Length: 229
Length: 229
Image 1: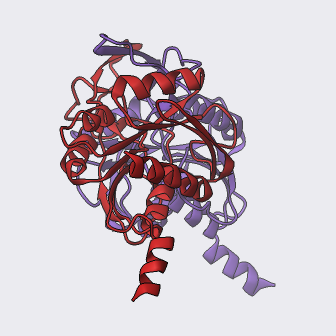
Image 2: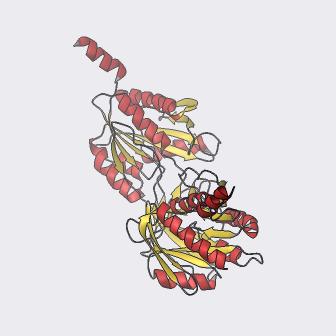
Image 3: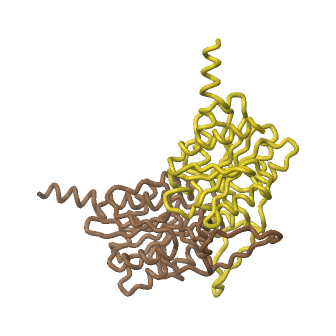
């Protein structure tokens, strides 16, 4: 009835939308036991996924290795490496309305992964690892002919605003959410975060709060810009 | 009274002993957000610590970053890097009776850790990381004038017995526990493990079982050899 529909409209503004969200770190294998990774906990991406579900969206969450329970009502696609995440993202993004690239994807992977555990060579005190560039997931999604509304993240330790605005323009994103991970108590592995969201012409400050609250505000900004796009 | 003492003797054979146990992986920083690590979950080391406490030992557990609750009754020393673990181990080991090096310590660390998050350089498709050798914790403990009874681990993906026996002799260990981490369902991140324990002249097979049961058997072998040493 009409009351139900009104409630749905008010409480589930994303009903009928498909969101694809990436979260967590990636792991780039060195050999069967060693890898390169980063300090991303996945908490921000999981909070965005949970809030998007709560707002009525159908959510696909592409997640690197984290220690978090997947939010109820999500489709979880578990991946390890940047290449695996790239493949999953490029498969799902063309049919999505919104793509949120929250994962901390490794920029580089090993040029060659060793089949067996690498052994220390007696007398060899140095070891050189040669890395090659990984595909740029969010840039490749933004280049799609049928691109979804595309939101990037910039986790930086310095010159945050400059890097974020540059990344927004260079990669053809619709929005970018920037945070300074060098500040204690926000960003990686924290339960709190503070973001500044940039569009081509505007900036929106989401002050320090728990990641659920910040995720809810971020989703409202995304939804407003998506509706206007 | 005598009954209490008998019970204590039977159930807590390690009463009065101080065991130092290392567990988990180490993390070697590349920059403020990236690091090199390995797939060690810490489960085996934590199981050994829990069983040693249950057997009456006073236990110091030096642990790299893991997602496990510390066993009750342990002193937990949380570290990140191999250098931090080395420092903690060399501080505690001289006063210990038994040292069990179960951690999967990074053989190499970055020659230079970047102060700020490394940025991709446009046009630069390759990146070279130069690594230098980390200190060898278990070898340095075994070299101490007042060395504890020293037990190493060898987690290998091939030629397990040969590597283990070589490591035992080369590093001056009293025992070494070897496992093949290439076999699915045992070793890293599994709840089960199978070990072969080598002394200079003997080998003891601990068949596949949950890590608590394997830890209990391992402790019995260590305790017997320690008593005879």
